[in-house]
Length: 289
Ligand code: C2E
Ligand code: MG
Ligand code: MG
Ligand code: MG
Image (cartoon, rainbow, N blue to C red; front, side):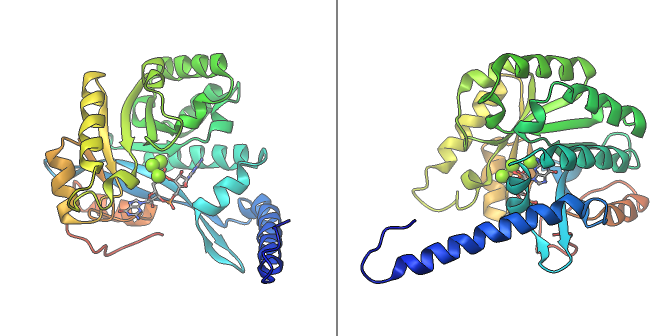
């Protein structure tokens, strides 16, 4: 209970908290049925090589069309799902769906799927991955799994084994939101990451004078290069940001400057027209978010 500050503010504060908690409980219940009701979908955002503007990969991003609340952001419902085993169900659904969708794209295009720490720590996680690959006929080398630094917080040895087994399967691993968690450079050495994704908080506003983010971007790029990993700049929205992250050596760009997340239908239509080259021009013409 919030402390009285003598102005009656706390009553509103607790009422608001209670409402937020109620909404969370309701959403959790609704989320349990969302898959069966067909309310969940995946949107795919391109990762582009800025040297030739070609799409190399799409990141799968979950979308929830709630019957009453409208579109709910994964930033809201993923944390709710992560409180229980619900995230395992959502995670399996996303992995299988993304593999099926990617199997319809040209062979050189990869798909990246977010895996939450709780799911990553499941003992049968590599088995689930190989099952998803087998039933979709997607080549393992086209699947990338994005994990955040939080996977290293729990059972350390189990996680090391999972990294090993996934590496042997031939899937690629990416470190997502780098620099925002309990960063320890040792993590990078322990796991066979192919990519480091520089969080958008380091990218947005990086062109303002006196900003320290350019120094951080350069340092992460240098570190990644030394370890033989690629870097992705996330959340690039403006031309000057694109110029800066390119100049600092980022290998791939993900952000509204190239494209928002798209639907599978939009992607298939575009691929039917030939190879995919995007223009860094924004504002986006299509969107699935
Ligand atoms: P993330 O994995 O870091 O994904 C990148 C987020 O940045 C996405 O938000 C994307 O839409 C957004 N974004 C991309 N370009 C720009 C840009 O230029 N400007 C701005 N402002 N934002 C940009 P989204 O789709 O809302 O997803 C939020 C987070 O939810 C993801 O962050 C990821 O952590 C989580 N998430 C999404 N789908 C899944 C999933 O299937 N499984 C799990 N475990 N987590 C997921
Ligand atoms: Mg991600
Ligand atoms: Mg990210
Ligand atoms: Mg992020």
